[in-house]
Amino acid sequence: MDILFIGGSGIISSACSRVAVEAGHQLFLLNRGQTTSRPVPNGATPLHGDIRDPASAAAALGSRRFDAVVNWVAFTPEHIETDLALFRDRTDQYIFISSASAYQTPPERLPVLESTPLRNPYWRYSRDKIACEERLTRAYREDGFPTTIVRPSHTYDQTLLPMDGGYTVVDRMRRGQPVIVHGDGTSLWTLTHHQDFAAAFTGLLGNPQAVGDVFHITSDEWLSWNQIFETVARAAGTQAELVHVPSEVIAAFDADRGAGLLGDKAHSMVFDNTKIKRAVPGFEAKIPFARGAQEIMAWYDADPARQVVDQQLNHLMDTIIAAQQGVRP
Image 1 (cartoon, rainbow, N blue to C red):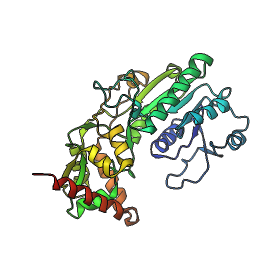
Image 2: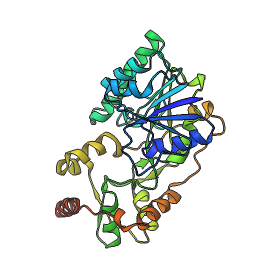
Image 3: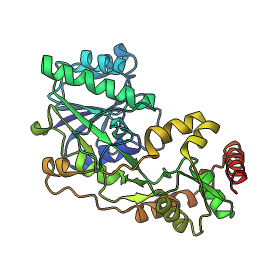
């Protein structure tokens, strides 16, 4: 098939690009050509254009038509309106990458299904994704626009540590300093390796059963945040001294991080993947986070330049820990 990825060099999309090419598809990547950390896979055709500039995107696309178009970088209804105008008559399937954070937060019941209501009063990012879904659903119902919606959860590659603060947290662990875990660390979380995501996602490309429908794609492994921190520490060859801080307290010190916690990570989120397994027979997430954590630490340790420590964040963590310990009897 002829497939267009808008983006295609991100953490999730880079794996999907590689797998799509390996599957024999003719893959086109529409982007500005500015990302060098994840190169274009051999066999893919870059189209240099800016999706935020409709004239630039139209010029890069020319008269091409596609069996499927995937937008990895649409975040607002305005972005969707651009795509509706660009692709209304040039694709048989349009896949929007939404977010599992759009689901009801906190969830009323677990595991989360695709039918779980969408509502997130804490995080603007999630509300914008919901608005995008609503616009595309209306376009499908009213005009037959061939929409498929995919909701990733926390998907990672070797460059992405799962906790806020990234390598700064690992550096603290290795130096014997305490690190912050939100809440009591027992809420459950789902981490999905990008190769596992790609294995399922590429099965939706050109799949007529996926048009007009929505899927989430995650691992079936559920870990507490205490386990996640301890797994990273083991992969880093050290131990973790965990200090538990309520998410509301973290938000009081850092509103941006607080929004991501209260609107996403602070709540247990585990998923029922029956639907994607039915649509893509044979799919199974195979990479446990223990292995993923080893890949991550190998990547960081291979080049000291990657081991960036944020001293401002270090100071903030020390301040929050001191405040939390100061209120203990």
